[in-house]
Length: 183
Image (cartoon, rainbow, N blue to C red; front, top):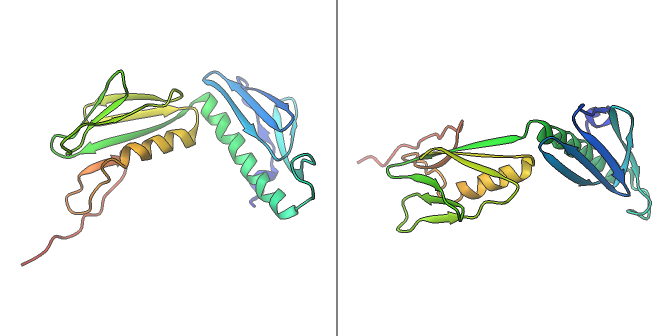
């Protein structure tokens, strides 16, 4: 565990934090997020401290190693929730290939990526998806994990191949192309 989990986490001004039983609820301008905590969380006026004390109703015995790992995990989840509720997270995908297109419909995200059929992906309610260009998809939301999972799901429909570099790439991703067969 790093020493970052031992430090106090400053609560931004536009976020309210409430702790009831094992659930830490954060409310901000972009929505709300609930985090299940297994370690003790101390809330001060404008800061929050995660301690390695296990809650007695969650664990029967004290296990110091597990408590320290949960302290770091909980602190990281709280920091990510604060960032997500104030500014949000964004991931951009780029379609590279002849005829590759993306389109938003009422049913979801429609992809034309070289198959004989179009691929239709249902968009989760907590995410916002935009097609900035026919070959550029922007995914945004308050939960970093949800944004990353949906971006990985979209990318899995046509993973970039190493010979021509065609497929669905993250915007800043570089594909190292392999050399083709020589005769």
